[in-house]
Length: 140
Image (tube, rainbow, N blue to C red):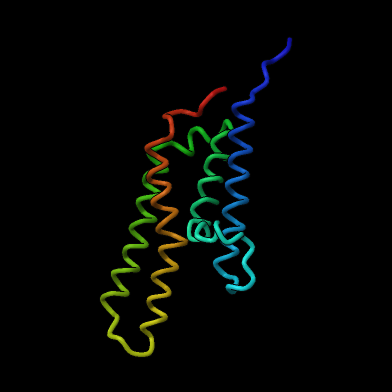
């Protein structure tokens, strides 16, 4: 008995892998010096969303597996995103509360910025994705 090819599932899996790849390449640009960028000039602003794109790609890819249905529900994804946003907010509030200027001010600001890039933006994207995702695993 022949089975119908699952082109939708394959396309979503490939899309997830592409998002992961773009996110990783964009994240590498965050750590490079300005002269050694891997992304072309029009796409360099994408580097700020690199970790978020990689996380979203992982979510899209993982939801295509049958066992992921009970582990990656909308509610769990939403709670995880909100916790990530809260952690990033706490870092910002701690930096603002303890910043008195002086020598460590720049380092504290960089720590808060990196918490936003690596934790806050992916958390925001997860929270938004939880509203977009269907209740169950999509079947194609």
